[in-house]
Length: 592
Image (tube, rainbow, N blue to C red; front, side, top):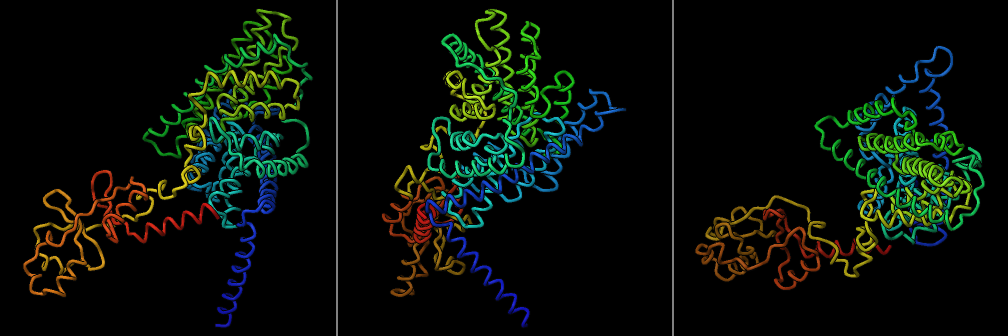
């Protein structure tokens, strides 16, 4: 007994302390938000370091049979994407049961922000960590940013839940986690913060999260470079001269050339994802099937395996000559990367689509450089500049993030001399590719985002629906011609009942009339029908907003009204009290 009381006392003390500690961060204050953003950045930075070394170790381990004496023939490595896909599928769907970890992480983060209040299950981050390393090390065509984006946002969501943050702040810190992951893994703190607030919308950005995203990104970047080193993510980039007029025109042309390829990229990925979703096979097997397709592609174009940034370094060094053959080779590699990424991520493999977009853009830039040298030799002072221009332009147009794409390439390469050319190419690509985006959960702007629906309408009831509030239950219906005395044997005086005449709804049985009849004329009850005690009352629908529902309550003076679904079936009731409880709960949640 004493041990039981002692345990309860300890538990109560710890719970009381955690609640008081959590309240420090629930306050929507400037310094408390910066403090939590710092914690998120520090933790995510450590995770990024672990991801870097974990991937490095996994790459060495997986490629060991193809290195040194007695190495296997190079073409046999093509079987590894299938093996990796099978392991990833089993881990996600059978072991961890976390389907959110499948596919691209950035889009999952965007969906969580807009539709789930920034909430991400705690198990998603470790599952994404492991499965992404497996996907990339076994040759899957994907990027680093998807995993680290979802991992960082998962860390932030878990911490926000621990400190009992309201939805508005949890969304904000989810973006801070995203910024921290990107800023660290790409050694690009400013681009990480910009990407996190810009990638949510096609024509807008989340300005109120910029400060916390900057803080978390810088902290994560500092932690990461303290361990990994300060060399740019893409090293060996020469010092390019500032672009002149002719080169700016060429950059604009390259931006236009990128748009059909970004359309192909988005279409291939979307088609792959939808087809794999429709296939009648176990979900855990789909990444292995996608890996089998990649195995075939790798046999012809081994450059598309993994992240591919090593190949970008090679073409930057001029290892692909400016010849007709070189141009067609680069074109084939770009298309192969598009298809391989669609199979990897679209089938449920764990990875991102941002990294491959940089690869594709860089290869297209190298192809354009070759074309310029073949047609106008010597006109461009440093043709390799188009590799960087292509990277920025392609990502900016595919993701609808022009500022983030330009700054990301500058920080990843440590070169800002091409900034004017990068910007003009990015703008030209976006001008031609506005209808599509690689992130299907993106919305146009804040006005159409579910995350900001209460900000756009001061009438909170006007943006909430009856379906958001009611709890469906089994409803008993009454017939108008039934005897009241027979019905009263099994009905409860505390509930309302819909009354039908044939197939037509005519109103509700008004228990106040029944009670009055009992008191004033008890003998009369035997002669009454249900229709005699029925009042006309409208039926609510699940899609109806609560403001309209409130007007109906006022007009009918009924304490409860029945609710029907889209098929016309009665599925429950909404009470006057429940409506106002929902209003009070939402206001507290949004304004806290």
